[in-house]
Amino acid sequence: MADVWQEIRAVTPGEEFRICPACGYKLGFHTSLFRTEGGFLVILICPECGARYDTGWTVPDGRRA
Image 1: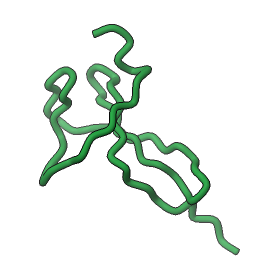
Image 2: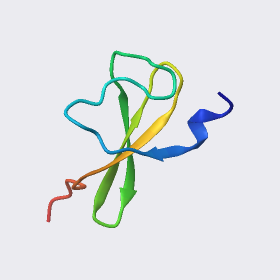
Image 3: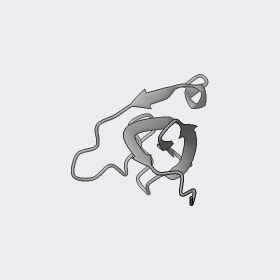
């Protein structure tokens, strides 16, 4: 598994998404946030192998007027 952490793979989670498709780690993910125009894109990161997954989830940036 060469440099799996450099690529962000698009995924569509089903009922549950906790097992890493790259290495089989079964205890869930860490999260990372990438700033976008409308807030943040949520990226899931496998704590075992570092693979990153884009679920398409976004969150607002939380700025107050």
